[in-house]
Image (cartoon, rainbow, N blue to C red):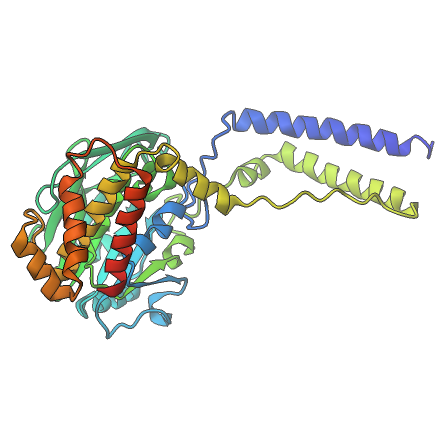
Length: 407
């Protein structure tokens, strides 16, 4: 009997594994990871890896810091200094009255707070004298897809629409104080979902479509432009940008069914049959291990080389432009970023790149006139060029890097 016991246990384990695999496929019949995490480390569709790492490109001269503490115990932000920005992206913004007062004082000191969430606590809605309504038919309706957003003109250059075929997971303002608020964006139904609240010398921005900052949305077509424009409300001379994770992981219990998003495993563990099968599997595995402990030497497992996910991500982004050799389109984006930098930092109009513009830019930056003329000439002739060679793109990039470094 002892001779056949390991084989019997192995057969039961295999049957249980097959049963679990079948149940898992029945529960999640799609291969797409649809967890809404908003985690800056997650490269899944609804993570915020792209949004976080692009902060280094939007604010090249600012320090990017991650905060995990509540406002009363900040160690990365100073409530009495200006030119700071706090970015909060979470499913729900569950701040209490004390935290809201701390955030308000921080904004009054000349700082910026950008909050993107689907829902807000009752204290938050009363504090800002606004009310948000969830999109869909119920509080639990998260499966609606095809989110469509737009930014209003003015203050943005145009009211171009941005959409993607993913989850909607948003809300809109049912009411807000129009005396202190300024409309910035709306959803496809025309309802406002992005406003600015002016507080002394600072600003608080409330945005109700957090999945607009997910990897899926930003990497879909040209939606990265929505990200760039939405965050352009943060002043260009900001010295410190803080990515907040306190409200992303803050626990709350308000009876509304909110909280952290449940994973697939937690949903399966809520099933009694699954828990029973899992514990039975663990017991059988332990019995099998005890039975096989008499072996003199265990089988040495084959270790595979760790996969470099960061390299895969870089290849994916690089494949969008460089591998397609779309040098002209890439040059346009570099030019647009350069002109945006000139407008934000040096307060110069860039609609007319004439001799006066060159002289003013030379005077404000102290750059060599030849370098400025070369950059301006390349930008002005970009649309007339049939194509841009690799060498031309490399020279243009080198000139821009020299300008940013020496300005």
